[in-house]
Image 1: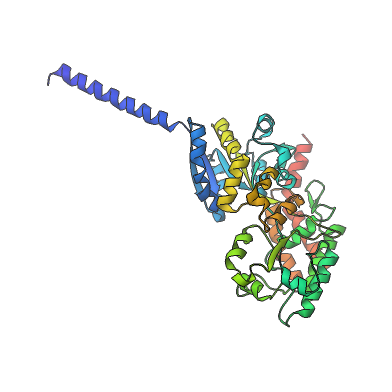
Image 2 (image 1 turned 90 degrees about the horizontal axis):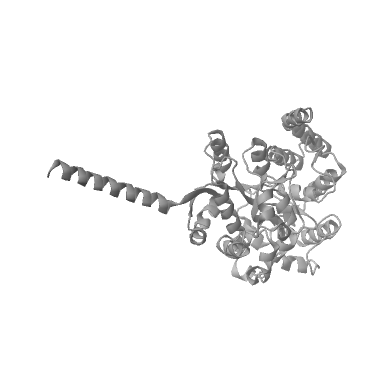
Length: 426
């Protein structure tokens, strides 16, 4: 081969390499990095091909992260400047990410969107994502807690319908306990779970934190009422002072009638369907949580989709958020996961409207209230669990229980007070 021919062959090879290289990058398109958590991270990959078909210039790379490490991984990613474009956030994490400056506000995008309609969302789930008057996330799925109960045991005790108020609830529990075997109870409230007490507290008019989240408010009349009601269930022997590792099997004990009421979330619909014996499948049901004077509020939880402030692909990321927010896609997501849709319109679909166990959750979501929107809430909630367990065990008095919570919350909120004071002085 002559030198000229060799040069021509080399040039042709170089051009082919560049051509295929450019073609590969062009096929890749704009890549949106999406971090999704737990089971949702597995399932959402089944929805992505349709999004990419509708948006041929965008590809989505989903990274599935276990829930157990997700919070720490997000904080580490922010510190290392390697955050994704969009991520699933637990609703209790939104305030923390906003305080760090990690998230992009979505008000303008939502106002211009034809897909995300605030009026269609359950109010508690939407409010979870409003911090400082701005919107930082779009609810992806909803979560709340309500009653799972044995309707046959309730009928045998003389009650044709589930309780709607605390008075009706206590009357039913006392009647069930009176008929029960000595080691059986009316309700199981695991002492290592603080969510039942939190739900009862959110039914009160006073907030759990006062002065804009600067101080604890656990000695307010509302929390006194809620905590006294909660502790009375143990004092009367209506609930056993046990945690959920101290019973052999929740579903077996429920099937045996060891207890008739249990407060839990939507994931247990599938679990009860699978684990209750066939002869007991018509004996259990769900009902909204009773309140002090009628149907009561419960916890607004779930997950949201948020865009990170450092993303260089915010427009493409928002298209993914809009796609996953479509009612038809949310219905498909419910089919795949059992996660409750956060939009009212999805609940009109026959799949949900005709589900006798899910109906109570749709009702409860209309009366779901978010916990205090402060970054410190998870730590305060953990302390609520620890101190309430001591109160149930009789190690501290109810008054000491509430005073301890206030002191602990005030200490945890000290930095928040200092930051707010500094901002007010600017």
